[in-house]
Length: 316
Image 1 (cartoon, one colour):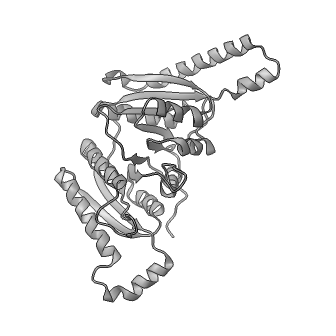
Image 2 (cartoon, one colour; image 1 turned 120 degrees about the vertical axis):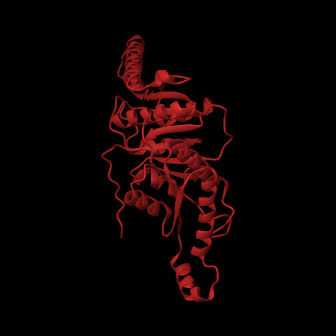
Image 3 (tube, helix red, strand yellow; image 1 turned 30 degrees about the vertical axis):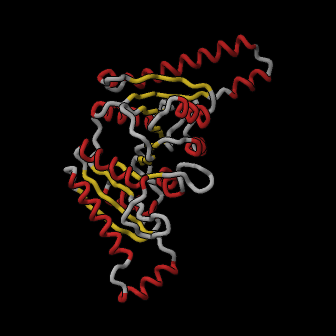
């Protein structure tokens, strides 16, 4: 089973109009609970990090009044973090915590780089007036964090979670599949291995005078080839040991449309995908395609990057 030795949890201390609140928002509570569960499951180290993003004006006021305040922002933050350490301890998980001043996504990435964490967990919620699930902090983590990022949506917990692994047959998608299969050996889940084929090429060929029968035969051949590729990828894992096995699906349409539609139709709980994968048969999940998909997804998301990815984030 794939190793998961060190987990970092991003803790959002803001709630309503408070900069630091003892009562965490529901999404952060869910991320904390999920991280404690994972740490216990994999016997992993656990660290909580809270990054407080202060404006220049607020920093100035705090510095001026620091000697006159009995409870400043950082003191209040450390109290909340101590309660999370106790919560983890109550579940048999030892943990540490850190409070930083700065942009949350940047402080999280720096902590991953400095301490070699294997996964980051953060809560997520609908963003502004757009209704998108992933705001700026989470999207920046998806783009720039070198380890897998698990963005947790608060939702009802099903008896058996259903997971979509989006594959482009690249090395990174194989890594994702191995990880999810390994996790399913410990905790039962239903896994769907999915690939989407953009059908716009068919329309372009039809416009050039290619016959319907030829297009149909071509589409069937491609679908069969992709399904064989997926089954070969699956054969490299221990999926036969799983209670529910793995279902293979080849979808027609652009990935950023077809996969979110599949997720909604099947009430999927988690999408596992690469955000900077190498080109596969259809060459998707490169650049903007992954981001367009994430704009439409309404479930939790676990993202991976290639093993040679180097984060552009550096200490100041």
